[in-house]
Length: 179
Image (cartoon, rainbow, N blue to C red):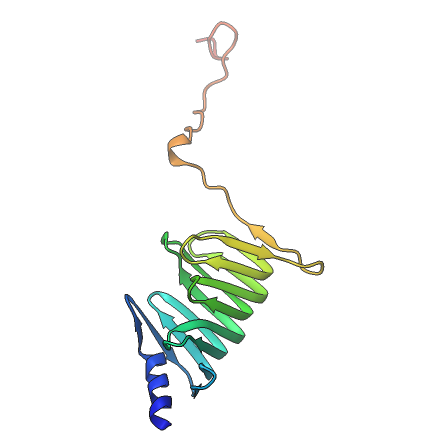
């Protein structure tokens, strides 16, 4: 029995899936082979490449081959993720769910997300973001409507130079000094 628990913990902490490695640190790990879950509590930090997730409590659900199906983060969730197109996002929520097969984050309750290096922010009761496609869905409610704030960025090639100051010309083309 101890060997199975040890294998689950080793699988979870040193998980290597193709190119991805997930590293989880925390104060306490409890694996349940029968339920195919691992409960992780106390200063939980999950690192996967450039992605980071910090939370109070994390439950990892595994499939029959002991591959993670989903991660449920509960309490004081903070995150930083990189989308497939290279955009970097960070934010927070009360709770979060990561659907591993879909590569999709669900930020739940008081959810906030911003694009790093830009003024783009999203706020809602639920934010869903797909890491691969960049698809985002923001849901508010009657008390707290969803909010999107962004700044249009001008295309540098379409910018016109500002008009240069000129002297005040009269109808004949001479300036007010008569020259």
